Image (cartoon, rainbow over all chains, first blue to last red; front, side, top):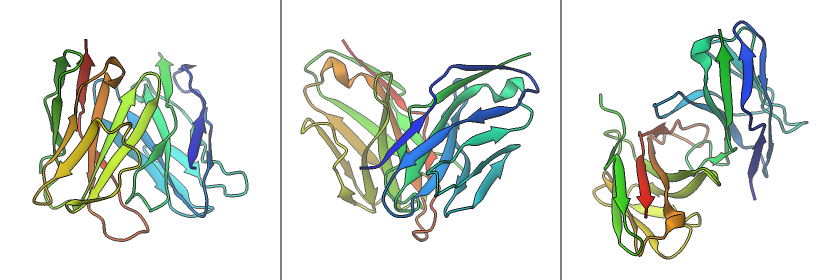
Length: 113
Length: 116
């Protein structure tokens, strides 16, 4: 079956540091890949997505590239802010998001001023 | 417009009781999804509806769990004879399914269920 593996954290960084959150997946065919974010006290929000190999998703300074050869979708940001503190979930869908999403366990990111 | 809404926001129940959780999707969204978020298991997919039918029920944890959707809109998730391991946050999401290439799921705030 499908699965997503990501570093669980917590990951603690100082403001303006470079961020990488690793995500690897197991799936058949060509899944769509997503990063969702859950800010404190808020619901899950889509951060970015990629639907085919070599696609780069980007939003709010975050980027992730769909790497089929390494089955990875690592999340990166060049300079994090305190407001980026949240839980980040990597996810995949076989049906482009029309079916149920398979999520990783989430990475708790803490940014210190 | 309004987002996905869920009720109640919190539910405390006694072991063995039945509970019903409600989800109001975004108006016009044809697909509706239920997930469970718990400390031990993370985010698990439970079931999804395309219109009023549920093509995939494989994620339901046991036969105590059931879900229905009527009129292509509101959905209820029912848990019978609740157990302590059912304690979790139950999330609902909806999407406007355009094609298989990509469909963004919009999530509600969740219902926190506590089984004593």
